[in-house]
Length: 186
Image 1: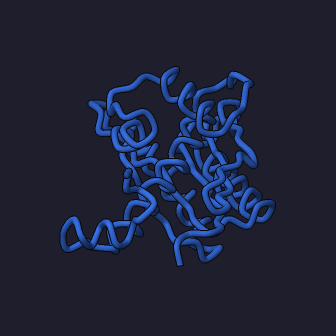
Image 2 (image 1 turned 30 degrees about the horizontal axis):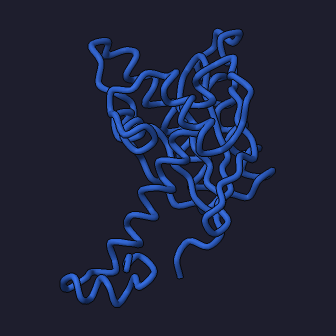
């Protein structure tokens, strides 16, 4: 079976703003279900922030019933304290997904940008423009964390589709042509 229908929840973890995006995949059609952010800056207590992340991810799961969960891995920066905080936020989001029985996949920021734009060093504006292309939506986000999360979901779709296609190994051009007769130009 080739990923005929699935719902992917993508998360861009953060301790001040966490982005999330929900993508429906039906055959070859992609559809945006929801994308938004959870603003955590008004809460001083770090543990309250973690509780809210868990609650928000759980609420999104309850609303959309995703079949897959993808999250952006923290990038390795120079500030160790920031990395630890981000890792906690990511861990709490993953725990909510696992509690719901979802398979979890993690992608580096560079991998997400590469999958969505073809350039691992793309900026947030380029990512947003490509998401517009793939998902046909017009509204420019107030926070790029939301579109980053949607890009994580789209990256996961592309990666899982590629893995499914890789399962069909060809033994040469004859085998490829036999498996893809519509791609031959006469």
